Each structure stands twice: as C-alpha cells, then as structure tokens.
Image (cartoon, rainbow, N blue to C red; front, side, top):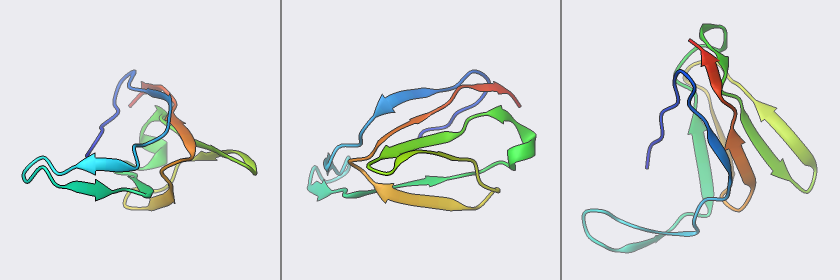
Length: 85
C-alpha cells in the first residue's frame, strides 16, 4: 500500500493494521513492520515529517530522498502537513 503526500497532504495519528489482504489473491498477510520511504530531498518541501510515537517518546523523521525508516506497525504515527513544495 502506498500513500503520497504533497501540497497540504497529511495523515493523522494511526497505527497500521497487523493483518492486510492481498488485493490480487485475497490472501491474508501479516504486516508487523511499516516502512516509510522518502522520495524527495528534505529541502525541496516544508512539513511532511513522519512522527512516530513509542514508549521512548515522539520521534520526528525527515530523511534524504531514497532513505527509509522501518518501525513497528503498532507504533502510533502520523505525517505532518506538507505546507509547500
């Protein structure tokens, strides 16, 4: 599943489902980890930070294009609004 955020794009606090269905086969799949891949350079847009909250606090992530972060799907997370770029 892919989400894209641009001009004003955001995704509020949520956790990702532990069980997903394959859209082609209907098979159930475990999804215990989530991955966010950054497709644009941080200086190319304002906002859009991934915020992951866990037992150690709140972590703001905005990485270079091509970098990714992996985190437990059960972590509360969100994407801040993209305000320009």
